[in-house]
Length: 116
Image (cartoon, rainbow, N blue to C red; front, side):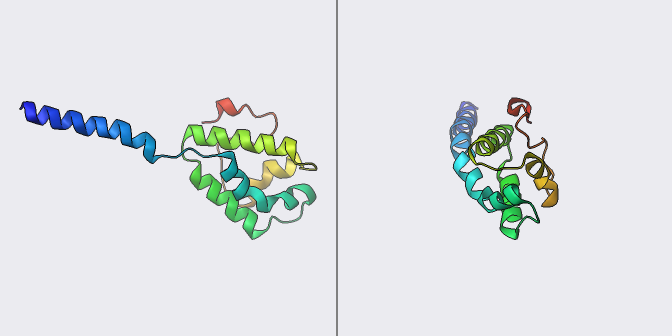
């Protein structure tokens, strides 16, 4: 019985140590890479190119956790402040244009801490 408890304890410990290492957090570099194909559309309008929508879909798949979604939100807000000529209305409508639903509005006024 003591052996079984020891094994269960070791398995639990391994799960606690390995799980955080197995999941990598989303970075602004990844967000920038996935959305780079959208910049011209966000500045000039028209139709988002396929590379843009593919990136938006990839980013949506990568942002699985609350932390990842909050990171993506913050990175997008930083990019919007850094890159000149970004049209906020086009940015807000981009997920829908690409057929993606996200749980928050892309906007400089979005409180990324409340994104779930």
